[in-house]
Amino acid sequence: MAIFGDAFATAFSLLFGGDRQLFGIVALSLQVSLAATLIAAAIGLPIGAALALARFPGRQTIVVILNALMGLPPVVVGLVVYLLLSRAGPLGSLGLLFTPGAMVVAQTVLIAPILAALARQTLEDAWAEHCDQLRSLGASLMQSAATLLWDTRYALVTVVLAGFGRAAAEVGAVIIVGGNIAGVTRTMTTAIALETSKGDLGLALALGIVLLSVVLAVNAAASWLKSMSVRRYG
Amino acid sequence: MASILPLQLSHVRLAIGTTIVAEDFTLALAAGDPTIVVGANGSGKSTLLRLCHGLAIPTGGTIAWARDPKGQQAMVFQRPSMLRRSALANVAYGLKLRGMPREMRTAIARDRLCRVGLEAIADRPARVLSGGEQARVALARAWALDPQILFLDEPTASLDPAATRALEDILRAMADEGTKIVMTTHNLGQARRLGADIVFLHRGRVLEHAPVERFFRSPGTPEAAAYLAGELPW
Image: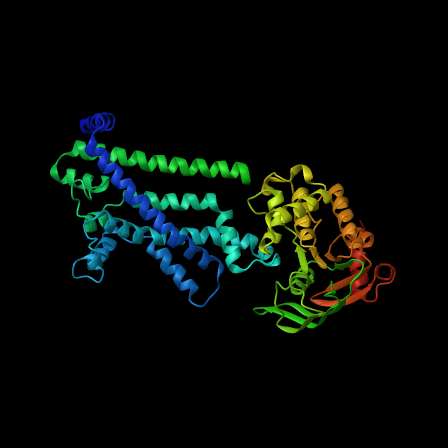
């Protein structure tokens, strides 16, 4: 178990020793996952709102599929995006494969269903509570959706952060479409996979500690935001 | 402004699945003093209001207004739903939906909050207010729309006597200004205090519609007599 002690020492010295390479990896990870989270939120939240408020044939089927997509395996997403972006693929002309852009696309595909499904649940509960009142006041479905998106903003921040956590922690998709190229597409998770296979377990574990810290900080922020909003707005 | 009243319901039926919640509502509501709707639980009081207000679509019969009631009616629900914003913003919300400029709607909302005695808590978040305060915010929110007819579904069901009195005073003021009040209640004392005429429902039917004095002195049906004998008199 000495390896854990060594790993913490390594992690500590890497973090506070100002290791440029490490910061490059951490920064790229955060950039890619943040961009994917923003795009996925822009796509997923409106879809969640539409599914929560609108009633149409086939809605229940879509909800079931969407819930199932929350468990989408990252490697499968990586493979599909790889095929789409590869030179011979339909989107090959974009030249995105093995760039951070491809990683953003893959993570967006991975977490957009999660954001949509969780947002749908949140908004459906809010709609059940406010439906009569909003209709009584003459709100259109679009106005109601906008109102409820704003009204559940704190719960939705938690939803979005859950998506971010998932994106930042996955390795299967980014390693396939990014290729783990040092200095270009190497993220925390792909670096951990690489260092582990090279046998540098200390460095891998150190990176793992950094990753865990980021995820922990994100979750702490989410829970703080939530409790603050409950205190303030009920 | 041309009146949307009288409102005429002819043999209105509502079935939800195989459950018949309204058997035969035939009723005329004219402009003027408050109409109070009474009847046992499950007799269809809330359903009657929801049908009149347009929240439920009848499966049979007709609901006819003198002219298009769009934007001319409002409803206060038994459990008012408050958005996660200030009391003032909740009251102004209905006007915002109608595209009224911010200054104008804020001024109106502030005036209505004053008139329900809540000017002091205008900027507090609505969801953390007490039940009595929320009931008054709900009334102010409906009042802000300046409806020709206001439906209220047991607005005082969960209020203490002081809050109930306060609400009744507000309703009387609104009635004096020409708003038609249509309210359900289990509180027969309140029905006497506020009502000019009583609508008695029994198992999804309008069994009686009579001036308040006559209804309490000599109910015209055995069902109404049994109801009056069974209800507590305050």
